[in-house]
Length: 424
Image (cartoon, rainbow, N blue to C red):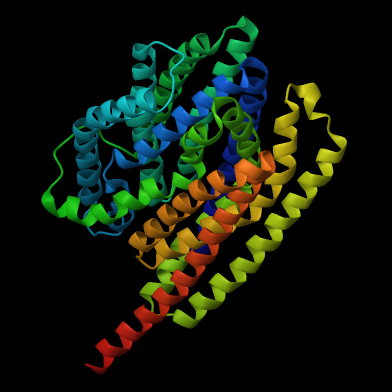
């Protein structure tokens, strides 16, 4: 009977996660298409850069505490997980306002702002502490093995963006009007998401200041959390200084479309985390190596298949009739080949997290961002839009290959350490 229940739960979780992924993909697609029609290239370049900065900041607002949920979920006392959640709330209350102010000053200094500063401040308040809270609820749900809620919570926020975009298009408003709608729908969806998470038993409501032990244990995950997004989010702010807002907007639309196409592959990569963690704990190093190598092959082949299919569809689809500018279409045709490196990047990052090497993942991510910035500067001068594509693909290949090497080195070190302990 227990096996039947486990199989039923697995089927339910798989269906729920898959359904929410479809919702997220469709919502993201609607948002990108509508934004391409609604905003100018420069306006979307500013919006994408701002949201990218906010996304990275939202990963820091919890100071890495959400990644302790997985260890706390295996503790004998269920109160450990509740304490971690309460400490997270206290951390968000403490760090949230500070990070919002730093992000605000950085954005208005880095690039021209087409909306009032107070509107930008309201946007950052929603996109940093509130979105960080929703993401933390998703990790709490994942730790409690409620995979439907774990996938549904982030999807709700993406759905909110799509609803805001559709409303803005119907009302024919500019970027200021869209941001107001964005704020309203984001607040609504966040309240719904958090209420749903509470009903699932995935959070509590009493904040407390985190202990020194918690902060020390979470510190190595804090940098990793923000670093995991730097290549996919901070490339737009960097590109603003290289090529201007208009080119950044065209690049951002094309990149988001290709990144959305990679989501099934990245989700597959992330799903390997629990299995690889168990293999490491059991000392099954040979099986872990084989599993990772097999997943490298699966992700590479699956990603290339998606790239080929998307390239073929681009030959028949008339994207310009959907409102996409000629420059965007040209960038999409090149950036389809970044899907495989993105998938392998996610796989390597998941593997390093599974073997408890988050700092190595962060170092590689930051190095990849530095390489991307230099490649943007070097290739854009001589090759224009094609240079941006080449820079993006090369940077992702560097990160993916470096993470794979770092994983195999980490496994060898862990195996040697276990042998020394057994001999001692």
